[in-house]
Length: 237
Ligand code: TMP
Image (cartoon, rainbow, N blue to C red):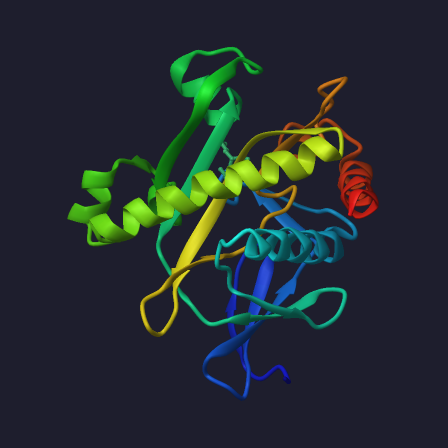
């Protein structure tokens, strides 16, 4: 399928129409932002890595019975996906305290939870993606109770599958954010991307950060970290 008009340009991806209204083409960029767009930069080669990694992980999730938007990788940076209408929720699963959880609740980074935690943020840049609960999401008309229950079930299943995949690579899945969308018939599927932009990935032995926190926190070695996790994943398959 061929790219047609540009429908949307986000911080890290562009989305194009195709000849078929049921499908879109996503193009991954090297651009990156943090802190709701306040910090801007480029991570050389990131688009190629995120495209590849997200597709590898989504196809593994599909094999485990979790429906996704993935259709097929078209080239280094572009993937054909099913068109969805995104549920405006950032669905975050955490296995270990880090990032905004540590900051908000005053918990040291690295504290391991007995069981995964799940939280929602309202995907709304103007409001700074505020945290919200199920009642708030329903009150705002973002999703129905049934959809929220399904999204929670899928998100925890994603955590189990991804946790195992990364463990085989000597990497700890600390936390991640996923997004879901509705197909034309209303079915909920995993959408957006799964990459070092959207996951915290720590080396299992040293706890070295191998994800976008290296950019957010000016730790250096950003490109090398993305290359390293991609190589570890590719070598484990
Ligand atoms: P947080 O600790 O900053 O809330 O981040 C939780 C996870 O969500 C972490 O793996 C990074 C990811 N994330 C995104 O994918 N997009 C975002 O805009 C933010 C803030 C976090």
